[in-house]
Length: 318
Image (cartoon, rainbow, N blue to C red; front, top):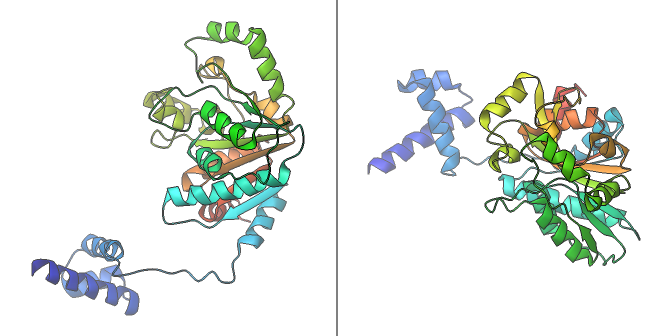
């Protein structure tokens, strides 16, 4: 009985707000409740499906926004997908779009570099090659995660993608971050490592995720490579996100930090020289990171969701 009364009250608030066009403050005064209480009831109305919101986008602006972003930044390719109800569903749509993108670019003897991340994992899962490409090569461009709890490690993604294309792969037998700079120097002198990193200089396509700086969004933090205080320090010097482990400031610069000296990853210069480098990400949290990656010219193509696209357009006043 009590639940029924509560539901009826939520319905009343929803009708006054959505159909009566009353403000939350006006409803609060009318019902002798606090405004925060009214706000919570409206949230509950959506959770209980008392209120459902449909956006009519039959005259979709996506193609217009794709051209707007492409022209403004001088990008090679821009694809925007509709934002879904969950991050998982949105990433699945991004994965399908990235799959189509790669199929359009496949050619004999192509070399494809791939980093890591949840969005790239969705891409590899969704990828359905139009045909095999036995002369292709998939190259890991960022050190391994070595974390069993995160099924987004670059080595595994490389192997899965190569298996789908029935082609060769090349992986890095090293973590993303080593303990000290000396260890990195020694590692980079190994002949097989030199050969691997030389492949990165001759890639045709790089498919990369864009990392956020906040600890709850950062894959590097979740993988245990950096601690929260390190993220705070990076934020303090102006970093907004990372590309292949390289932390970027808002203008796209990569400051030299203690992390840089221990990082096993493709160089920013090699990313800039890659003919096609596509960044794939979604959500508001990736706004400043993807803008930094574009401004630094580490990516020249993007596959993003509509919410992130609208945020970019708003931020840049397009």
